Image: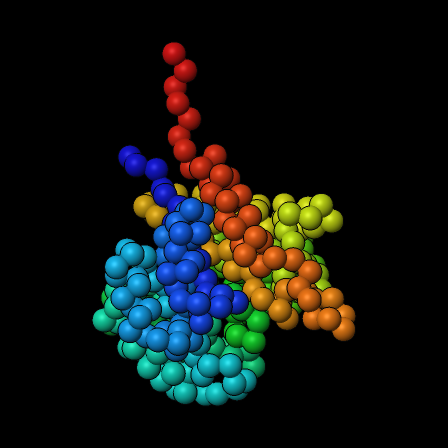
Length: 286
């Protein structure tokens, strides 16, 4: 049996796209990225973007945002928005869709209606939809997420636990059961480290955030072991650290306190090494 492989994904959040994608290609190749994650609505030239993917054999994970970033909205409005954005991408070979979906102010009944219909949409298009654990969305809360996952065991997640750490203001010591359930339904991983007062530490390599890094990496290992058990051939990971204001800045100057590209690349390289140590079968000694 072939071991599960890791596909590193580069997001375009914070990347200066006015320089063109080819400007970044040598560096992305060197770092081992094999796919891009971005909404088709946030690239300046759709045609150039799609040609870049095809000519350079990069995969694509489209990001979709039900009702975009406007709070509120009915179940039907969120479903219509989700479908519209997905249909824009269907002809361009998406690996799967990463969806920031739902509304955190819904009742449990409304959420059940939405995610049940989203599963039907997924079956209709024949391409997975991974719903992100994201603030402002229904899955921004661990316990709401738990209840929907138990209701819909076929629902897939993009796990970004940094949102839960920030929203709950703790390293989730009381959420082991919820994290295990989320890991068992996780399709895609956003490898960002959060802290009690924010969704992104300034630099995950800094010793003052060692405990936060260790906690997140333990959760990510659970995801990998679950994916192995489920027979995944490929696991996808995006080191989704973002630009200011996600990345902290110095007062008065607004200067970033860390280099975003270096942070993303450091995390990608570290998780590639950790993944290999976990998923590579031990060789028999002579």
